[in-house]
Length: 269
View 1 (tube, rainbow, N blue to C red):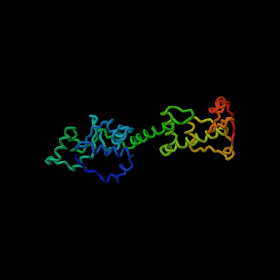
View 2 (tube, rainbow, N blue to C red):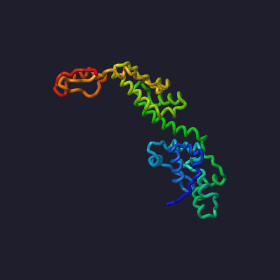
View 3 (cartoon, rainbow, N blue to C red):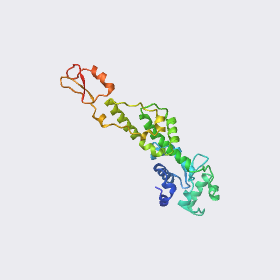
View 4 (cartoon, one colour):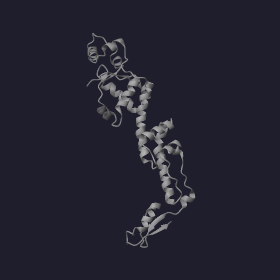
C-alpha cells in the first residue's frame, strides 16, 4: 500500500480552514487518490458515494479549480498543482524515485509545463464563486424541505429560493431557523382554531419571506387558553379522548357511538 506525506500545517492555512467539511474531505481525497504526478481521473459517481452521496462533485471540482489548487486538463482529468513540489521536492532526472514522476508528467503531456513553471491550464478566476455555488446548492436542498411544509400558496423551488437569497443577504444565517419557526406558528394556529378564535389565512410564501414573518409570534391569551373545547360523548359513558377541531364537529355529530351505536353529543369543557 503506497504511503505519502501529509501537510499537517494545512490546519493553519486560512484557505483550508474556511472550507466546509465536505470540501476539506474532498481535498484530502484528491491528494490521496492522484497518481505520483498529481493527476487524477475523477469518477463523479464513485467519488460522491465515498464522500457523501448527496454532494455535487462537479461543484466541488469547480471550487478547487477556482481556488487555483487544482488545474483542469484538456483530457478532462485534473492536476493537483503543488503535489509534486510537496511530495518530491525538486525533480532530478538521475533519481530513480523521480524517474517515475517524470515519466508520468510526460505521459500526461505536462513535463514541459512543469519544468517551465507555467501553470495556466484553465486555472479559473477566483475561489469565491464556486465555493458560493456549493453553499447555494446545499442551502437550496434545505430550503426545499421548508417550502414543502409551508401551508400557504407558494411557487416553485427555483423562484422561491431565488427570492429568498436576493431579499436577505444573510440567508445562510436565517435558513437553519425557518422550519422550526414555521412549525411553531402552525401549532399555534391549530390551537387557536380549536379554541374557535380568529385565525388569519396564511400569507403566500414570497410575502412571508419578504416580511420576515418567521420573526412573528402568534400570541395565545390566558383567556383563550381557558376557553372550553369541544368533545364527542355519549350517554352510555363513552367519550372521545381528543379535542375536536372545528371541521371535525359536524362529522362527529353524524357518527354513532362506537360503544352502543346511539347518537353522540358534542359537549364543551
